[in-house]
Image (cartoon, rainbow, N blue to C red; front, side):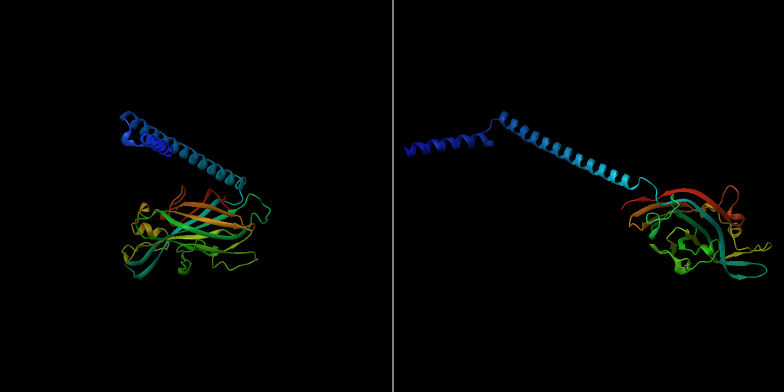
Length: 289
């Protein structure tokens, strides 16, 4: 009796093994099995992709909703920038018959006024921390070497270059609530009272260049560019940078500023000495934290 049961069990095992053993499958059964497996894999992949797409969609929607809720109203913005562009030079030697330029440089001072639509100042629309980062020359001049400097507002439109104010990477501002502060170093009043003042300087446009025509007076301004035969398109430049703000609620904001260095306007050209321009802008700070 025991032997019969063992034989029956072994027989069933052989039948099951035969069913799943690919070697014992007919050609038709083998193809159907492969198709079934492939279909199962496809269905699994489609389900996974659908779920992944759904997760991405929900995450994107949540991000948009979160961003939108944080930016229902504008807290900080830059509505205009004031520019002053001119030129200067360091002369190596001068005589009655010639004038040698050691370093001809073009500079553009810019004052960026951060404002708030709300006139009444509170914790939300006053400054706690401010810094500039990610400085890029999106269009570089073909002549000269461009750099960006911090500038004291009281030196705006002056050709003085303070080497220690060169911005190598990131510029952090000291934010103060004092009535009077030393603006020789990067400083902003927390109530938005003073603008960010920067100076774009394109140095060494001409070096050791001798002017033999000294019949007309030499003036240290944009007329030197014309005297030195500098084409404006050879020194045209564009710059961009990010400004980050933390307010007194510890909310964080950012905007990216794009600037084309103005060398001429509808009324004047730097060839005539200088260009002064007030340009309307629309740089909105968006809150990201």
